[in-house]
Length: 114
Image (cartoon, rainbow, N blue to C red; front, side):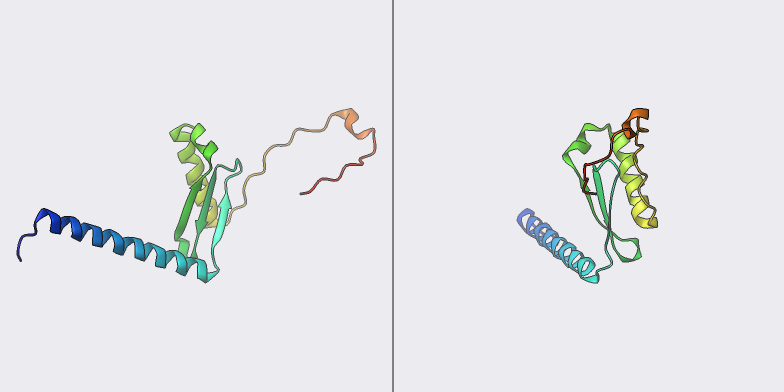
């Protein structure tokens, strides 16, 4: 095999990158078309993971506020969110403070959208 020149090597690498991007796009379309995608978001809303059939991770998205965490904390949230997406385990609910004693003295006339 003949040795390639630098311009030829660069063009070969560009071609390979185009091929990789094309395959990624095909895989993303196939996952989306399968309709079996599961999307799970961390309780704090910083990480969203999309998982396809067979546990294939389609996407990991980070909210801007995720960057305020330490690398270790963010890694833990990403890992926990992926684990929940793969196992179907529900997200832990945030702790709600107990109502004060006198909160129930007045009738409730406010409607909240849930």
